[in-house]
Amino acid sequence: LTYAFAAVSLVLLWVYGGTLSLGQGIFFGLGGFAMAMFLKLEASSPDITAIHSTPVIPAFMDWNQLTVLPWFWVPFN
Image (tube, rainbow, N blue to C red; front, top):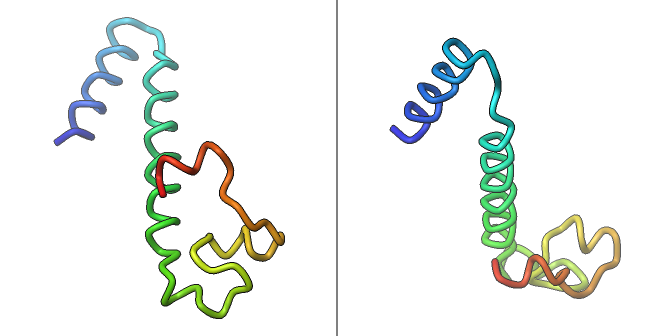
């Protein structure tokens, strides 16, 4: 339902207004990025990441030999 409202609002902006509101795209992008960070940390449970050198961090951080989460990931932990 939320996506339907977003689609209708974009159609109204494009057809009747003749312009694209880039502000909506920014909020969709930030929401998607935040959800991806949350889900990546949820998938990094200690059981799954026990074979990594630093458990409870995402695998791509372990591959790059990072040992702590960046400051902007801390609220999602």
